[in-house]
Image (cartoon, rainbow, N blue to C red):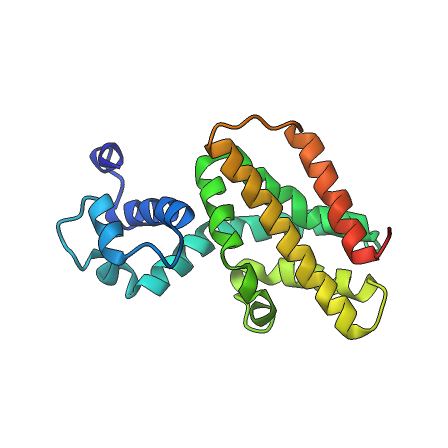
Length: 205
């Protein structure tokens, strides 16, 4: 982190980078503001408050920094899928840009953070940030409408889809960061994940 500071990275950017790495590995609840400030080698103990207002706002900034571009990519994929795509195509619009984050260390940190927030998904669908999740929400609505079963079952499957997607990608990110060998290539991993998510929402055995 000292090298980043020396290279001229702004304090706000540096705090985002440091917080992202610490939240991913130490847990959102386990990392303190003081640890973030010290890891960023900031002399001002109130650096987080100065640049973000609060620790919660810092977390939201970490999420939106990558969440916005990912959602734009979802929208482009959805547009390219045509007017009546199948459920698998809709699922692929979610999986492909998210799994692409595995190629970048910061992206892997991001998916590991998101996985910690999976339990809040039901509430998130009601109070989502349109700037970073608008296309995600829209695609999920389409998937839910095509999912068989009564409304409660359809909603449950959509929640399970997100939990499966975020959990599996986070585990692969952790394995990559730990230097573990993956049996599947990235392409095979993505294809398999799309198949699993599609089967979950379709109810196919």
